Image (cartoon, rainbow, N blue to C red; front, side, top):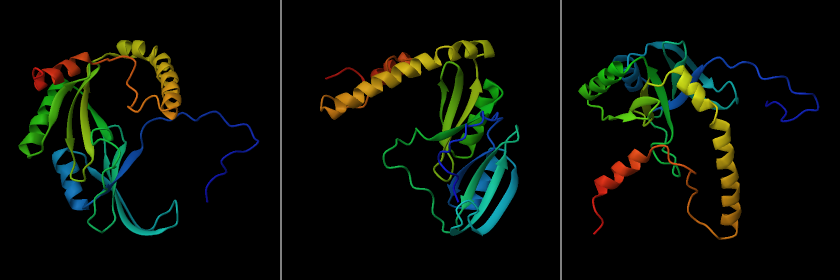
Length: 214
């Protein structure tokens, strides 16, 4: 049974959310997934739940739910539904959009993990420079896009970045509301572009790879 959507009582203040507890995905095969996360990435298998019925919804759907522990005590988890089926990609979302990122302590560790993954035959993109951190990207056996990141910006730079976040998002929201009105009126069809480009070097590199226009 779900909670009522709205009541006349005043809402209590938000409780402090401390950290990620777990993020769960569907797995095609539990052992294949365990090998990848435990033997290659080094995350220990820590907990398993098995049941025929889903506790939250009550529906019948037998599952094996298994968890891998990160250094901070959070988990990445998976459901093996016993049918050898992986989750299908979203038909309206590029493969690079949905992903989960894990933090490493240093750039040398990032380079070492890239070499380790490649030694296991895993295709890796990067090291990619995001200015405040650097990352590598790859896929797990279930088609989940993973990112390993090493922070390069210190807490003071991040604090400075935080002072403009709301202003920039508010500007984007106002522009998107206007874009929706224009789209409804048939004035535009293309998706809305951001108001500024924080990574001009990426566009320059992409254009250079295309070569001169014929």
